[in-house]
Length: 137
Image 1 (tube, one colour):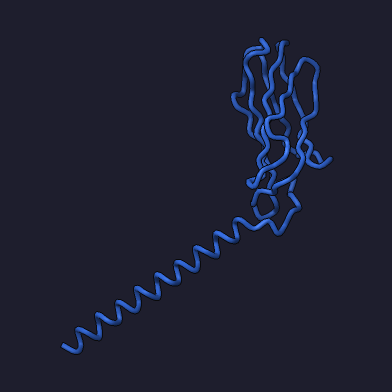
Image 2: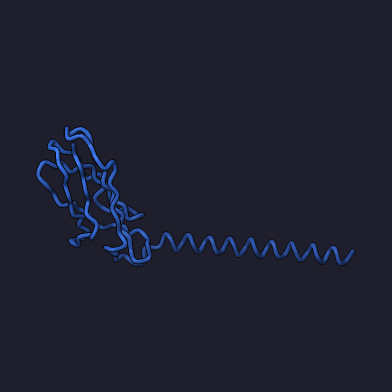
């Protein structure tokens, strides 16, 4: 009988220690992800999404360009001013030109002329290596 109580007590203590350890570990991860200690960004670690890849050249359809500015640890860098280089016949609307807590900035682009366009992404006067490729038909 004492042996069963001892074994049950052992498992209760083990479960309690596991729960506390997991709770502390998750709390530490959450704080680490939300931390903005390093404000420098990595041009090589940042990236650009374009969707859709093609749109009709009627000044109505838009292509959304989403830029993610990340540091060398892959965390978003907030508060960075983003701009796109311009090209003739493109209307660039800045939806969110300053990066948010995830390092995200958003632009909508339309055109009245058919063609392919390549734009540079400027982050605080540094150009990202990845260009924006837009196609209007």
